[in-house]
Structures are given as structure tokens and as C-alpha cells.
Length: 260
Image (cartoon, rainbow, N blue to C red; front, side, top):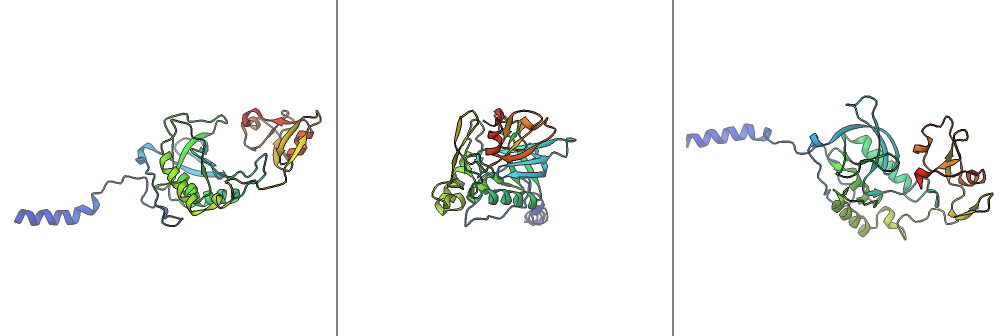
């Protein structure tokens, strides 16, 4: 009996401090939608890379700094999701594009810790962006955006599918609740119903292009227009200008090969 009492006393004082931390952080982001429960579970922190936010580009792309590697800036494209475009070449700004970008910025800025994770497949896309999962504390950011109806599950290229099952369940929830993009007649519905053909001086037409969409050109460095001002094709440009797609095509510019 004496040994039993001693064991109980030791358990009382030591037990609460003996739990091993399984996740990067215990400061979880509370569910933002109904009674949905976050499904994806992070790897141990030792298998992740802690980063700092540099800049949010849109709902599924952001820049991060790795403080462990001097001057390393990571342009991360989030795996397995697609958010509405801010500057779509055919439809212009799509519904919920601003909301997706603002929500992403809010999540990343309010997190105590940010971690990126790579899958087992390719780590880069054709634009040389890092293909990553991003964790805000111990919640998968992709899952938040999908569950809130601000992103769809897309660009599924095995073997980079580690959290596909969780994201598909999050999409099912958002779809059933009619949240965000799922409140529209169709996801990523055209923002501008008035689409028009833009004809080049050579008489060739690009069909269903929003002539007023903003694109980027480098008059001193080539004859391509770019949908993203951070496109790889603009890295060596000394001067960049933003123009409408109509103006770019009229001047003879063609879409950059990196963005086709």
C-alpha cells in the first residue's frame, strides 16, 4: 500500500509535464466555419521548415523567408488547391479573389509560427515556384481556405497528394454549405460577363479574353506580355510596365512561354 501511495503522488506531480509535443505548436487556429473539424495532421516539427512571411501574392501564392538560410526567399505555390484569380486573362478578377488573398494574409499574419512542408514528388513547378504545404501553427492553411469556400481542390499531380483526402472532405463540407465560390452558379464564375475578342495587327484573334485585364511588359527586354509581375520571364528586365491586355496585343506582344 505504501508503494501505491508513493506512485500516485509521483504521477500527480510529474504526469502533467510528461506529455511529448506532437505538433509544431499547440496554439491552434479555431475553426472558422460551422462545426467543421480540421482533419490534416502535421508532421513532427523536425520534419518541417519554420519560415517567416514576406509577402502574400494571392490566395494560393506567397513569399516566405527561411531565417536559417541567409537571403533565402521562397516563393511558395500551395499544393493541391486553386483560388480565384486576381488577374485572369479571360475573365479579369474572379469572384472571391480579394477575399481569398485577404483571408490568407490574415491567417499567416496572425499565426504564432509558420511552417512549410514538401511532399515526396517534385518541389518546383514550371515557374520555379516551390510547391509546398503551409501550416499556420498546427492547422493546414490549404484546408482552411478550402473549408471556407475560398479555394477548390485542383492541380492534383501524384505523388504530391499527402493531404488530398483531407482537402476533398473540406471541399465537400464547403460545397454542402454553399460557402464562398460554391455560393455561385458555378465555381470560379466569370466576373465580367462581357468578354470580347482582341484582334492583333496580324489579324489573329485571341478568343474570350478580357481586353481590360492587366498584364506586364518589359519594352526594353523582349516582346512577351506576362500575367504575373513576378514571372520568371521578367527577372532580368530593367523596366516593367503594366498595360491592358488589349494594348499589349496591339503592340505585338505575345504571352510569355512560362505562363502558357
